Length: 186
Image 1 (cartoon, rainbow, N blue to C red):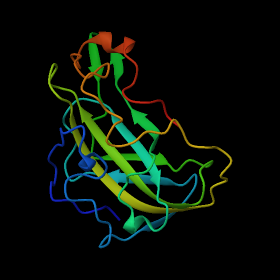
Image 2: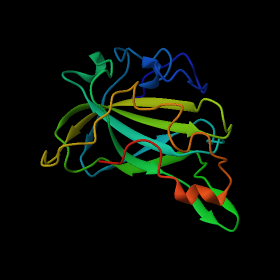
Image 3: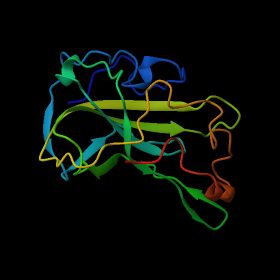
Image 4: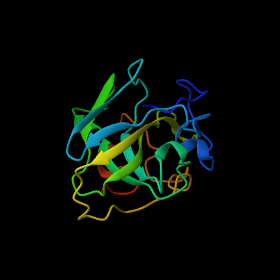
């Protein structure tokens, strides 16, 4: 159900590129199946190797205007979850692992969506952030449709190299005072 890309596990750093939506070579979903999921059901993204760069992991969704296999992701996106650091002692501990599980929001409308996960690697202060991206095609059923998603963003456009936190040292405890990257969650 994941869109195939030609970038494998490589990063995307061009913050104005449509590749930020689904990774390099993932614009077409024609050869990708769409999985049915119910609102409030859990889903898991599995990686072929553990995330090893420090930084937040975020989930976004974008409703397709028709069939998600035909959708290029140029519409509105909304964030549904962030995994951020925990703090203790003199530094931050990041969620570096092989899988990430969350639930489809109950308030969204039924329909076909791109479900996008990104690892925002910020381990190189003062350089362009590195994004590692994967995108699934899902058909959501059982959503109440009673909560409008938002805030809405465009990808590309949602991330800028000057955003707070992109140039911070990821191991310092001062990160407690930096807001989670990107817009707030739905």
